[in-house]
Image (cartoon, rainbow, N blue to C red):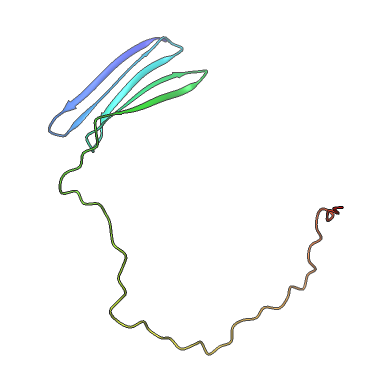
Length: 117
């Protein structure tokens, strides 16, 4: 069933700015939608959807990402060596465990070993 619609929202106080439009002839739907991202760029998605290729989209960005002047990257330097001495623990009083060899035979290989000339 053919259809066509479009809508948009632009609300300056809340920084909401997005829209969607699409058109269909009953077999193929073509459309696009756009949204302003938090970094100031506008993301535009243009798509085509049909029974043969499915949903195929192309994504583009307009503008350049901008960050406020008080933005600081989350960089953390390597930790310095602590000022207190490293603790020295005594060696454990118990012996290290030793495990006996398994009681079952080793598995036979599934294929014979190759013989090379």
